[in-house]
Each structure stands twice: as structure tokens, then as C-alpha cells.
Image 1 (cartoon, rainbow, N blue to C red):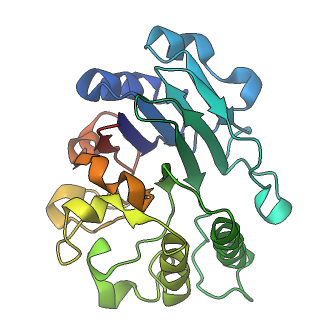
Image 2 (image 1 turned 90 degrees about the vertical axis):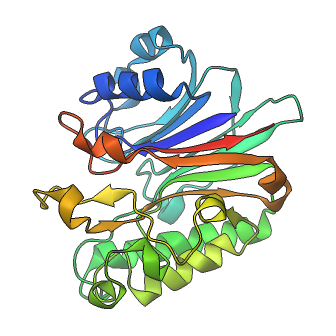
Length: 264
């Protein structure tokens, strides 16, 4: 099973780029974040024509939105909470049958958190911390097997997940309150699939700011996109790729797709 996760930053705007991802990577499952499309306008026909007739999605106008697209039938998971009771379309989950048994996939778009790393001064940052706390508590009491978490988790937890650990310690996405929480969520029973292939001592990024004109030369990136698996799937890992070249496509997202291959 080849899984791609990508913050597409508007599904309808970047549908042609999704076509490029499909042609280059031929994924079985595509998990998208920031689809920015309400459910009634979800481009079902276009996605079916691209080879993905099966999907689950939660979307809203202009903001957020997540979707799981599949070449194969899937069943939506109905027991997931409305995080922080905001109804803001940040999580969708589904189960897909494989030869070795079902695999449940969770697709998350964690709040970005604004610019000020102070929960009292910045409600967006407070929401982000509360969101991760709620998710962590839920997974701690809902132990899963044969499960995958993917998505734009909007936190770069490790020193080499950012271009400068020292300079970004006070920048939202790498502050200690965020990184501590993300690691606690991971420790509810998951393995960092990307770092299985790229050791923690090596730089690894999935996002480069639109503000940086020559993003590739300066390489001031962050790893905001993640793939986690339950330990029982670790022996199935066969490959991982960060599609860095996608950042140079016409009208790109500021995130690039991440690919993980599982022999299931």
C-alpha cells in the first residue's frame, strides 16, 4: 500500500497538481489537508476520473478540510470526536481492507496556532495546545492496532525538523509546549515512520514558507507533515519519500507530498 499525505492548500485550485502527484507516484491512498471545499462542492467526478472513486471527507468553505481518497473501497470511522467542539473539519478516518487485514488511517490537520506563542495572548495558540491535548488523551484510551496517522500536524518536534533549532524555539510550530505535546501523542502507541528511514540527526523538511523567494537555496524548512504507524506495522515499512521537487511546481502548496510504502 502506497500512502501519500499532502497539505494541498485548496483541492479545487490545485487539482491539476494532484493529477501530477498521481501520475508520478501512483498512490493507493491519498490523504489531503486544507482542502478548503465544502462537502457539496467536493469534486467527486474529477477524482473518480483520476482513479479514486472511494473517499471520505469533511470540508468547509474557505478553511481547513480533510479527505482520504482511495483506489479501493473504504469504510468511514464514525467514532472520532469533534475536537474542541468546534466542528472545524480537521480529522477524518477510514478503514481499508488489505491482504493481511484491515488498516485504519487517520488524517489530521492540526491548528497552525497563529504567531504569538502565548495561550493567554493568542487564542489560536491556546486552541492548538488544547487540540493536541484532546487528541492525545483520546488515543491513550483508544489503543489501536494496524493503524496509521498522517497529516499536517503543524509541529516540527525534533531539533533537525527545523532549519535552526535555537532560532525557532520561540516560533510557533517548534516551541517546547508544542513539541512536548506532539511527542506525548506519538508515545500513545505509534512509531515515526519518516524517522525510521531518516535518522533524527539528519535534517528533514516538508514545508518551506511562501515568504522565502529562493526557498531551495536558503532551505529554511520545517517538518510539519508526519506519518506515524502502530508498531505492528513497522515490519511492513518498505520506503519513504519527501517529494521536494513539488515545491517548485507552478502555483505550488507550501507543503510537499510525503510518500510511505507498506507491504500489507
